[in-house]
Length: 209
Image (cartoon, rainbow, N blue to C red; front, top):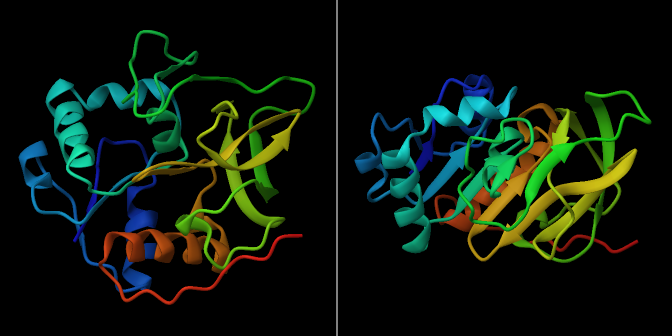
């Protein structure tokens, strides 16, 4: 069972529909205690980083306990940024600090927000990108982005390079919206659900070129 975290940040319905399309079992927990026994957690989101403040300390502790217990976690767009220590968009709102670094505004040398399709360049292997060739395009809509660190699995460039996909142990994130990215996005979601053990896994390696 995949727990889809609802904190009023916008794209929960579209993510839920995408998961239903791949027959992934989903629950929307009403309280952190309901995370007990789930096989995976997804934190979606769009918009301002300040929206994550709706997840209070009780939620933060509940998510952290689940991750410490080995439950895979996927952050999408704003959810990816929330995995880090914080964001300049809302300096007083802490992130989960599961990954080191802070998110910052994209340089204004190109139009911000960054909206539309852009290619993702894979930098290392990850089960989240099984079957995804480097150079695949995904749909982005954001103004702030996470830095390229050792947690980066793939990066994208919009004025400057930023982390498009991250992974550290059982913590994963995608800055793009897989639920709006066609077949490639569906594959990313399926890969995550397979990581959780909620679907039978069929492994296909991505190609390096």
